[in-house]
Image (cartoon, rainbow, N blue to C red; front, side):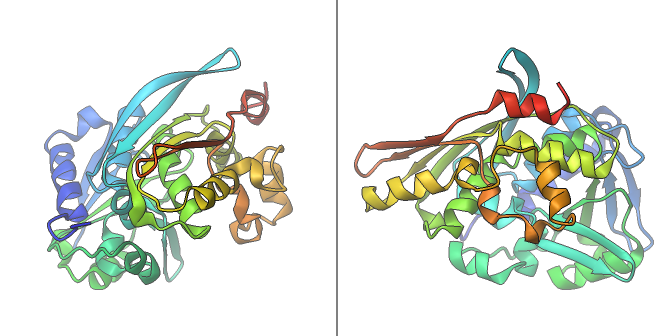
Length: 321
């Protein structure tokens, strides 16, 4: 896999530049910090919306994926849905989109994702696993937060990425916003890839990937919102992967274990499970963080493996229907 000419930060920077030319049309606002960094708000104080969520998702993917807002029918319930596809699955998802950087500076904390991770190597193990590094002179960070980052956070991110603050763009999107719900459902492909990688599948074997997940009705309470967001993928996320793999028997076993129904916690709304875990993600069964269904096509043998199914009943239960 030749990754030398791929820069997720330069790709995302181009998307950010387009947004900054006309932020109003994206439901966004743009501010410049004292240090010269740009903060692009897609829902903290800005209006945000479906288009904002689509753009944030494409930024998270480092410009290596396409995102569309479509619709899906879930047991008679029609919901807006996010479709995502990429021909660079490992870099776009694990190398960029994955929420793998926990930002904590003073009293400020946020979950960090997006291209800037590739400059700071957060976490290093993933970049070693996918054999990728980015050497851009610009950085784009995505923060899931309801608070804009203070100057200390700007300095911290810039330093870790090795760029000047004036060459940093920080995208902020709260979990309790429409854009927040869209960009989480837009992680459906990444969720499956991350799960398979944790089970021992070589992420460099992915050729392309496609996924679809519903955008659940928004809830103003952060914990309720977190529950619905996760249910969208655990019970509504459908994924399709093309891979080049040498061992069909191993691939069949991996596929069966890479869906949410393989978890002992499957069958309850995520909010119940989350509350029992004391609102600590690390105490939730990691097997649960997976899409509802997976289809994997192995181009080396022509065989196809499937597991799991979308669960409309649980989606309805999640939103109180």
